[in-house]
Image 1 (tube, rainbow, N blue to C red):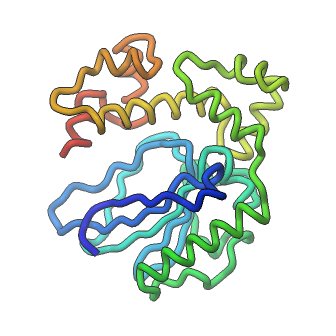
Image 2 (cartoon, one colour):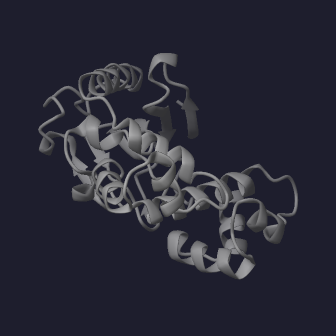
Length: 242
């Protein structure tokens, strides 16, 4: 496997619960650590020579440094699907990386580090399908995530659209996502910003992207980027392109 990161779409029947499957190979020594950013998702990850772990919902940046040549394979659950799949409130995994064998919902020994990467990805695919089939996601939270992933959305507006109280929405989001709807909205908005800077050709128009992704102004974006990524927007854009 060549160094880099690649994503693969899930089977059509699981696209409401699974965002993607992915493979990453750590480049040669000398490259800076990968900066993992909050995205409102959780990942079940297999690492070559080690085994499987779960990356819980993040509220800030995580610097991920692994030995050169390390192979990772993962399945990424959509916002709102992970809590049900793992059979526990995701608030218990907030900002944590947890060994898969420590989670009762995950079968022990199914993803040993001795597997070939292709075999690990197949087992991850099968296991993810089993998890979301046996423990269906909270459909209300999946819809809340869809509503909150809109520029200008607000938690109280989403609760009204879903015809439930804000307190109930917060409780269900904390279980299914790991944090409440206001934090979910912040993270989804920031994910839109990161997607836009990754796709922008040439010079990045931060002010234009800030307005297009739902920030009040560039100063608002700067505060959020510093909080969620540990870097102001211009520095984050340079780091992503590097």
